[in-house]
Image (tube, rainbow, N blue to C red):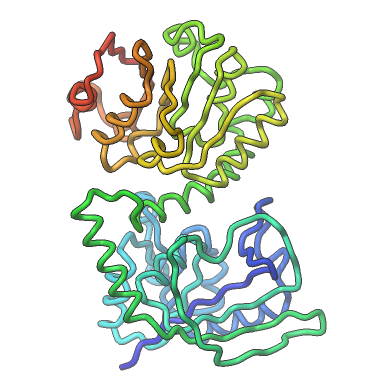
Length: 386
């Protein structure tokens, strides 16, 4: 049986599939596109979605199984006969569906899910609706600088008098994409993942989260703009007076902590690999009337971007090194960036440690040994309750 995987998406004329203001696709896409979506769902043997794309209402349109990709442990234990939550890799999932003799598979994912399937050469057909709108900012269909997906137009149709257009394509180089993906994964395993496929997928996730974090209650931008800093009192006390000192914040995200140090008088530089996060950080600096420099860089390439510059203080706060694949290389880079009498201040935590009893610690990797290999001298190591 010849299994076909069709990806269906809608975007604006300037290539945006998800608006920066968070408004749902349904709020700006046409009625005609919605009707075509319903038709595609009814004619498919199985649906694949990302967790954010999934809506319970889809179960009313079809009795076909719906596979929802997620890493949420609670959801993975909450599958039903029709809605199956899974954390399987795309190739593994498609192999399973082919074994079950499904013929027509419909992919309804967001940016991360779509990119995963496309780059692995798993999508046969793309059905793309272009709405006559322009948003300027937001998430594109896919986000990967080395994408080379070749398409052949099979059909074009105007859906309404406003100019909504449906384009149908066949992907013609899936074998090439599969080979390229397999090669990138071999390089990932052998080289320790520098700017690899996995890192780019992680970056897409952070690009998506950045704009949500910027508006979230947790980051509370309104409170920050009122003059309240977003660093802990013990951090400020332990780092000491930063007035006039050069401070580098690695993996700075949307810049709330970076700008807190700027407010305390430091000459700050923030580094992050998420473009969306740095857009938020730059906007926040402007709104708060604070001086800061933000540099877009993969952490492993930051030495080239800083061109020999040295810092009095390097600040790393919680939720940073847990994402890194090569901690020893990270520590080496930090040591190069510090002035002779400079120091690294790291306040780190891990969500797993918060869920386990502190009586019996589980060691995954020894951060202290890593720092020692990078020739750091530990002044002190303190533990704070979460």
